[in-house]
Amino acid sequence: GVGMGMTAPVSITAFPAEDDSLQQKVKVSLRIPSQYQANPPCPTDESVKIEERQGMIIYSTQFGGYAKEVDYVNYAAKLKTALGSEVAYRKDFYFCSGYDPPMKPYGRRNEVWFVKE
Image (cartoon, rainbow, N blue to C red; front, side):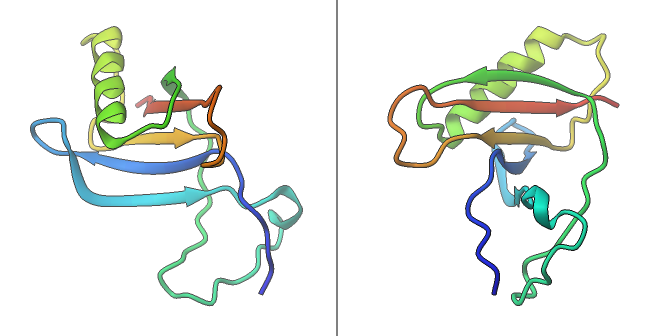
């Protein structure tokens, strides 16, 4: 019953398939606003979970525009190439993050995050 508004970034946990496309299984995460961090309201929908994300070190790349799945896949491939084989990071998932509301037409910010192992 508490309206919290939209927060940024919106993160989608992507699970790459063998061919680096994305599996249909995704998890969308929204940041709980600061004033609710200590005592977040309980979700009324059982499909919504509150999860504490531990601190992490990420490798990231940024791009603009209205991001589609193909954009995240392409930028994940570019980040993978840039990191090479010497860098250890989680390969079973990565984050696709967007920072802007849908009605913002210019100067959009999107990122792909790989989590350091």
